[in-house]
Structures are given as structure tokens and as C-alpha cells.
Image (cartoon, rainbow, N blue to C red; front, side, top):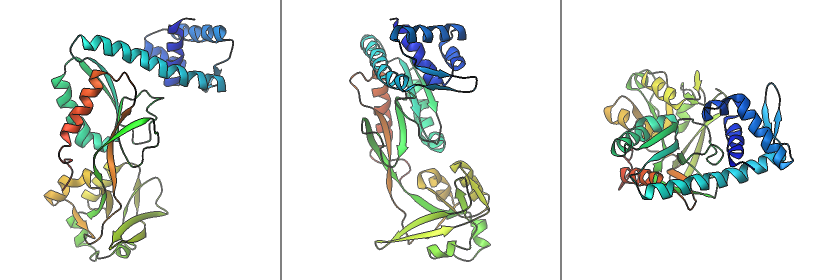
Length: 299
């Protein structure tokens, strides 16, 4: 059995198509397809369901993919570890981060890191949706909230909580917001796909308040929520890490300052395995240095 055939199969699954794997591997699509067929013949099982519209794994293919992917990663990282022990830090790091966090924090950290280590390259995915680190071969991720995969290591890099805020121009046009229920009749900027059934949570003296809010604009982009608040369209409920500068400059004003919001944490997450490359270790150390002793978004 040819190890290259297994690598091609893994690439097809990760890319979601033969054509995608062909581009990633710089290999003709016919060769990619032939190698997968050869692998299936060697194993005596069908690994993929093929159709003109969709490519999906069989049950055997899914099991085989997860087993082989882990071993392939270990082999590649073992090679990297041996080679890098004898040379300068080098290689590729794949990173995942929410877009807004990347713009404000991860991108500046990456820029400094790449300047310091010219032999290292980085691929940054700025998807705001959940990314499976194992299946997508992500080395490092920035996330908040609870860790869903116990096989991963999460190092806290700072707190996360939201603030309720609006532009000075908007606040001049509306009655003062003194308590959460005052938001009910305000135009609130909704982070999500729908304008209906949206709830903002607040805390005061150990008591929790949940206010149902509504408005005229909803978007799945936190960046656009913040821009809309800056433009005076309404009240926003956003992570303080993303609006620290605007609050300090007065472009946004926090309301309901007598109330707190639920707190969580921001983490840098990476896979726990024996052969972590020197490049990944250096990047994680670089991030920890940037958030020590306190995260830059703390006020």
C-alpha cells in the first residue's frame, strides 16, 4: 500500500472534492481520483460516495480517515521536529481566529512573529463559525467559552465579557437608559440572523436580568454591529475587547454601567500531541508574552 495514496485520500476529504485536492496537491484530478481508487482496491472497501453534486465518506471511510489523519499528522510533525532541531525555526502554522479578534490582536501578533522568524509561514482562517481543529488540521485557534474537545489544550489569555454601548449621537436622540428594561423600546443592533427572539443578559447584586430586545438591523458580523453602533443606528451588546479603543476615545459610550454582563474567557487552543513543532511552540509563547501580565483589552 502506497502512503502517498493515503495522503491523497486525506486531502480529498479535507478539501471536500477531487478538484480541491488537485489544487492543494498540485496534481491532476485524474491522478487524484486514480490514487483513491487504488487505495480502495488495496483495502477492499469503498471509502467515498461519489456523485456529480456531492462527495461524502462511507462509514468505513470516515473511520479510516480519522485514524490515518492522526498518524499522518504525527509523521509530518516527527519529521519537522527532527529537521528543526538541527536548524532555525521553520515550517507552516495553520491558525484559526474570529475575524474581529484577528484584526485587532492576532494579526499584529502574527506580523511581529513572522518578522522575527523569516523561515516560518502562517495560514490564517478568520471564520467566525466553529472549526474542527483535527479535521481541518488547525494548529492553533483563538476561541472563547467552553472547550468542546477534551483532547485539546486551552490556555487562558484573558477575560471576555460584553458591554452595552451606543454612540453619543444616538444617545442624544433617546431617553436615558438606566435599567435593562429601558432597552425594550430602543432600537437595538442584533448580532445574529434574525431580528426576533433576541435576549441580552445583565447581572446586578447577584441577580440575573434577561431582557428581550428588538431592532431594525440584524447581522452575523460583529464588525458590522460595531460599525452600525458607531454610525448611530442603535444600541449594541458587544465584547469589550472589540470596542476598547472606541470607548476610550468617546466614539462609543457604555450604558447600564451599574450592571455587569456574564463573564467567560478567551483561550489560545492547540492540539495535545507529542510532536508539536518548534514553530508552534514559539508562536504560543509569543502569544502568551503578548497577554502577560494582562490582556491588552483589559480596562
